[in-house]
Length: 135
Image (tube, rainbow, N blue to C red):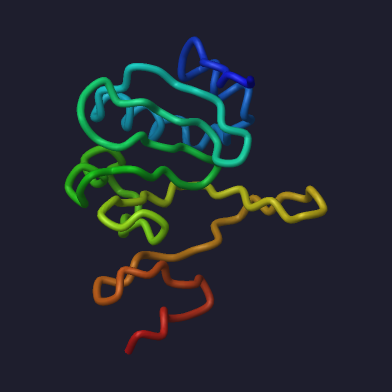
């Protein structure tokens, strides 16, 4: 049976996953705002942050963090970042980090910001090329 690898620290997780330096202040802010007991590797989703109190696990990746229990918690944890509801897990919130790294199937990486702000009407991330299309 495979067991999850537990990281010794946030720095250990950042180094192992190759997360961008531009997002490190936001990762640190999340850990200061949300009480976290431990950090585990997840090869598909990045790093799983297990809360030390009640609430869902948080996930940090190259370009976003998710698992926040409210918009307010997400905004306090990641000031200045775009925030919106998590589509995959209704009732949870996602933060779009300052730098996104999108990986294509061939392994190449795009290091540019992929999305704009979150639409205040439909809560979808706007494309950098234009509006979200809800209006």
